[in-house]
Amino acid sequence: MSRVPTIVLGGTGYVAGELLRLIAAHPQLRLAGILSDGSPGERVAQAFPHLAAVYPDERFKPQQQIEALLQSERAPAILAAAPHGVSAQLIDTLLTTAEAAGRAPRVVDISADFRYPSAAAYEAVYRHAHGAPARIAQFSCAVPEHLRELKTAHVAHPGCFATTILLAAVPLLALDLIEPQLFVAATTGSTGSGRKPVEGTHHPVRHGDLYAYNALAHRHTAEIVACAAAASGVTANFAFVPHSGPYARGIHATVQAVLRRPLDTAALLARLADFYAQSPLVQVGAAPPRLKEVVASCYARLGAVSDGRTLAVMSVADNLNKGAAGGALQWMNRLQGFPESMGLTAAAPGWT
Image (cartoon, rainbow, N blue to C red):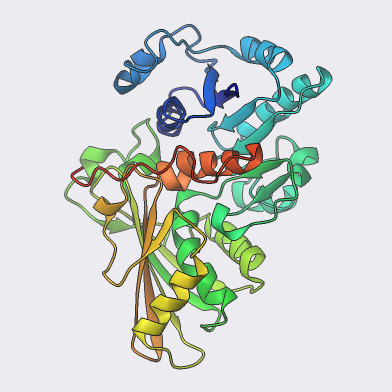
């Protein structure tokens, strides 16, 4: 069977680079083109030197060439890593072009543009008009492990903070183990702030430091609440305090809550393991999970402890991989009818 032609949107950003790395090793996808209107004609290896061995001659393409590909290729896969506020209009234009040519591409968007159920909900968080409100109903937003019956043609992948937190929180809510008030502290690496250095998130500023920001006011909290409710049927309150960590990749989240009824640590771990028994990329263990166990991989790891009255679930995932590019490819596998973990089972390096 020929490989599915795959288009990447997002130019020279970290997530786009991670998408390219994963596609190069995927047994059923092939890169058909990567869009960058800012660097058309530039070699991919110039922006991503670590990918020179797998893309020695590949060059970034302008939108016009990407549109031509969509008109000629059979139902391609589109993986969108364009910025919030840009992705929706770009996806709408490309889908319109493909549909006019009788093509039916599948899209996974990694931006926030299609994570909300309405334009009003999106605009309330991002404070600007939605770029393609008529397309919103064509997208579902969920962590892959939490939505088994997909009813839309396209998917919006939750953010990296949301993914890591939801993996810990959704089982607790869905199994009715806790009161619907969760307290979350999560720390992310500097790659989560994007490739362009800005004051406060540039790695030399973060190095050797640890600090909270947007405490109880992070813009992804609304997304976490909505995704948790959709996956569990419970609308809960999340008191979320994000932190900037002094490392490049990975998210460590601790979710705490009050138990509805007594439950010891062994029983809690057993409930979590059972919940994710059919999820090959989520691992549950008795030992507290560590970032080095998952960084640069598409795996997430959970650990938990209970004192009989309250619990804490620790969740770790790679922000660029499981929380973005790898999670998006996990969804694309589903959309294409491939095994969910195809091309995503490489172990973490361990000594990053």
